[in-house]
Image 1: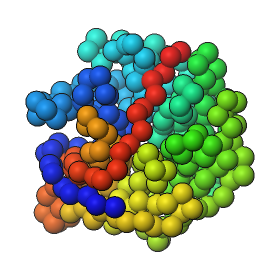
Image 2 (image 1 turned 90 degrees about the horizontal axis):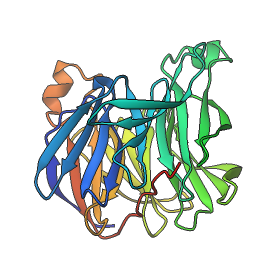
Image 3 (image 1 turned 90 degrees about the vertical axis):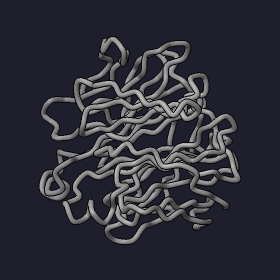
Image 4 (image 1 turned 60 degrees about the horizontal axis):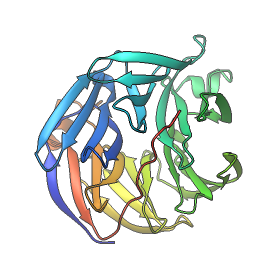
Length: 296
């Protein structure tokens, strides 16, 4: 694993998440969730665009042959046109749940997977009815539930052969692997493949063409590269503590974009971490896998 920091984009986001490369637009997209913003950056032009969102945009996917996005907002899933602000709701969370949606990603068969989280940590133990879940939106627009008892869902990704799905429950400090049946979209044989230290939360992940998992970690400012068996195979140390999300991009998918957050940092911490919330770009010696668009 060889990586070189080649650029820092001074975005100062509260919480940069759901970082995705659009190969046709030659742009990197992400959301600044607490500030209700969708960002788009064109590296060749060094040009940034920012679009408002009606509520927290937690994750999203591109829609094939369209300038609309498939978006997981805090309260549900909708098609969203950033420039016109048009919304077409597909699914809403039950109003009696004290949860919101969080990390989401397309599988390579064209289904959107998204998990929910509980913002109030006290409810993790006090109220068994308040739990996050993992949802799957299929190409026909149907929603199904596949995991329960989640605290904060993160780290979705798939192996290059589509036979393994990865997932993290951040407050449990665990990264899981599941056997994955790609045609039916069914999970089985859940196992823990990696753990992080207390206070170090596994956040967003991506998988490279060699099958290694790159995981952003909140609390130690690292991106750790794991082999498929969960053994550590290298790391990047950022100059900030809250790494949130990673994505491969660029013409050859060999640039690693690492998003970060300044959310929750007091004045002293911000003085120590003046680049908190910025987007970091690394040249790597491997390549990512192109994102799949939603066709529904």
